[in-house]
Length: 489
View: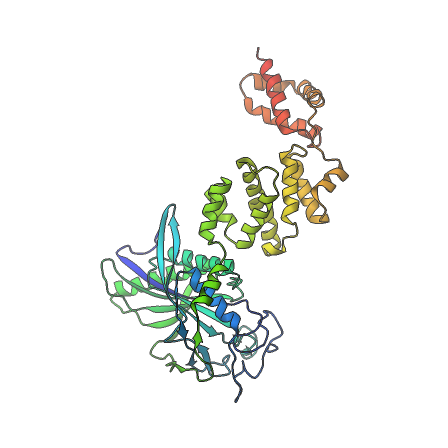
């Protein structure tokens, strides 16, 4: 629910920068690896030394074509680079190589699901190529330090139309962009490390107005939650100004997550004139239809289409499918587990979904690792699920087997055989134990017979305890019900 004066509506446009997963920088051969020693991944080209010449990284072009095609953009057959001139301590060249008048991709869109069954299309004005600047480090007890490792790292900037009407829509849009770039394998989507960054242009107007209000630019939102919170704050700030008879000043603002407020960075009147002009050292980028068609053939299944397929093909709930397809690696893992099941019934697919969403994601989140670093291969998880499905082990025993698999990396069959964990399904053996449990607990038997049927859970627990969790739960439940109900007659 919107948390602002409902006589007003916000108008929001987002600029999302995605740092690309190329091995080398945009215009030189320096490494793009994150976390290296400061100022170690540099050369005369990315430092802008006199007389050096940039050379365009082919992967940068192919990555942006993947993004453009995945977001329904038109691809320009010819696009050019420009120099964006400004001075900042972490920009040693004094300019960035970017695209201005002739971007490579334009006129696309993404669709976000606002609520069950209601979708909204958000337009994409353009997607263009550029290089990143360096990083100024201010939070030390010394003067500001500069790390130029990031200079020249390839970026794409995705500029939306001002179609977004709430912080929630903005959150969903950024989430969708992250999902697309990670599915395409062109960006890791890590907002905390800065490989996905978001700036917002925000204005407000009375509902029914067609003219835009004065906009501000909000920067420094390095998480999905902060995007939502920062926009919420800025919308209310602008409305408060207008309601008190003041004017909104066009300026650049920084989100201060600690204080939960936006702070002025600079006014647009004081901002630099970027003085774009054509980059003289790079030729135009020419994209043929054949090249575009070849890239299109390599695109992965769209995340939303994959979610819908999971629901239709595996008969799992939409809630499950949303979680399982949130990341491509997780969706791939789940489908690999499904392929390993002996029978792919609705019940078994749901079992695979529960284990992937529950135990697998629990380990990933607790250990703070990527899905690709999860230690158990999907074939091992599928093998364990087959043991549950076949009645060899119970779900309770499977929890212990799963933990042993994590520790030893052994297959579930080896663990079950080593520890003698095979489920007891011998009806006669279980019946003997059930009789003993009922004989020892006459008071609970009387409670059941008097109508307190929830006591059945107590008997099931005692039986499983007596068999060290190895008794087949289905048989235990059936025997207990049969014997207890028989005593009513």
